[in-house]
Length: 162
Image (tube, rainbow, N blue to C red; front, side, top):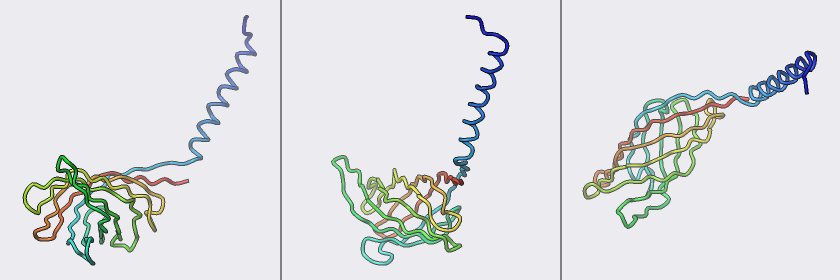
């Protein structure tokens, strides 16, 4: 079958319409902007009661941070799993909505827990954090001899706007 010049023009026009509609649909749905973040967290264990911490965060998410310890288990291989719920307020008074998280670590000395894996998901918040989400990785230590934690965080926050 032989395609004539007018048929080629119609096919090209239809293909262009389909590609244009697809591109417009993708751009109209959402656009996402991501930014690298990082900082440091220092807390006191027992900050506002048993099984809590309370302290400060500096860096891109500067403010006050507290953790409610929901449970602690130790696996056969010595890895400690600390299940937590965060409470985070920035210096500008905005709150971050943080999903429940699990901190994993190993004791490197009596009372000294090395935090090896601690992934935290931020699922929005108030003010400028309302339409954002992202993940941060945290490493550091929890010293139960002095009741202090020292943690470094880094990751990415993405703002999705309609």
